[in-house]
Amino acid sequence: MFDQVTLGLNVDPLILGALKEDITSEDVSTNSVMRTPTKGEVDLIAKEDGIICGLQVFERTFTLLDGATKVEFFVQDGDSVKKGQLMAKVTGDIRVLLSGERTALNYLQRMSGIATYTSQMVALLEGSGIRLLDTRKTTPNNRIFEKYAVTVGGGNNHRYNLSDGVLLKDNHIGAAGGVKQAIEMAKEYAPFVRKIEVEVETLDMVKEAVEAGADIIMLDNMSIEDLKEAIVYINHRAEIEISGNVTKESVARIKDLGVDYVSSGALTHSSPILDISLKNLHPIQA
Image 1: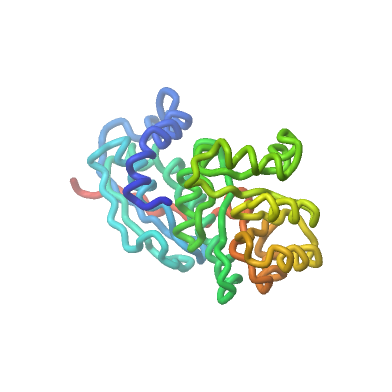
Image 2: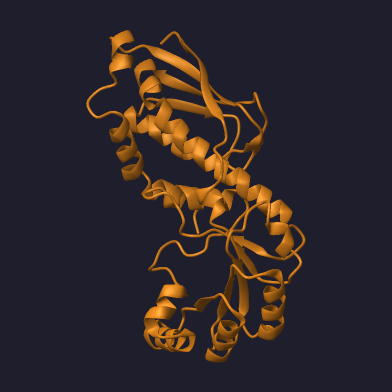
């Protein structure tokens, strides 16, 4: 869904908002010690092993503050990095390097953490044929960054937002009066090119979804025994997605069930950051 071109076209207002959050009037600390423009350089260093992601966003944070800032990268998004590895050198006005540091690192650490966690989940599913999906459980105003990071880590994007597809969840079903009614309403309203996905929690709901002609059936928070029975009943009459508290610790139990997709909110809401620092800031000759 996302590549670096798409990311670049859409993120400037979000990055500017983050910078304005951090600098409401001035950077008092920096202005206290740096009264005039001074050219400097700082190193971008990995402090733990992982998958790097968000380098373009990291760079853009600084160039939005000052277009003369230069970043020399020694890695690219998707690369594995090791603790202590020098990943880039940033050159520019020291005042800009100091003022943009935290916002730039916040993006890079968060996105790299998601890419790293996703890659670990993908590795656990290797050989199963299952596609790992993210969810809409993202940080407000950061979805574009977080979903991009999932793809860099080897995962796949589910819906980007509510306009992007039909997914009938428990409350949609309750509002419609049942699984069959919800699917029928969706088929009548949504364009014919849209697949209809429905979330089910019981075997009775599975049967109702199959008979109503759902394209994708999401088996949500079901026991292994119920999952196996549901998969046998569906019998390739719909694509199958498993969801509900899927993490690195639990994904192995569903690896061999023969489903099409596994979705995990943990990719974006529970991935730890990747520890990254800007170090060794020093003045250089202009």
